[in-house]
Image (cartoon, rainbow, N blue to C red; front, side):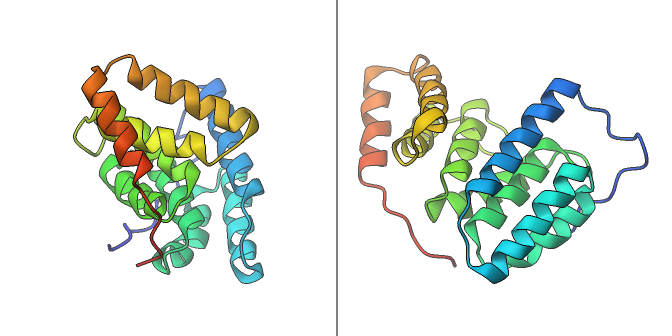
Length: 184
């Protein structure tokens, strides 16, 4: 997949976000990057991308993450997807976010699995599909621990409340037989 062009740096004050949404998004982004374990060379680029994001320099964050994403680094794919999903730097690009999340999710990145599940739940960038939403959220919950696991499980259960028993069974079956694949 071709990675979308770099995000444009917004004019000063051009990107106005709800302060609570911005704090929550920043916390999610920084927490995910902080718990990631990567080789040293990639860790520096991930750290630089995360730091740029925290400063609000979304253009720089994308520039740091794109080379890693192009090489198939699942964390970089997921974090770049987060930038596109939330419109940090330019208008939201749900299709690009879904593609980036899918590449990272297939490699076992739990953050990307959860985000992809949420996109399937809402039909943003992908067709709305509760079975796939359940599958990805179930995988994310199953492969994390603590508060993160509880959060992903609550999201999965919210999707489950919209599903029939047959759909739940199908989502569980898909998650049960899923196995991660390496970078493309």
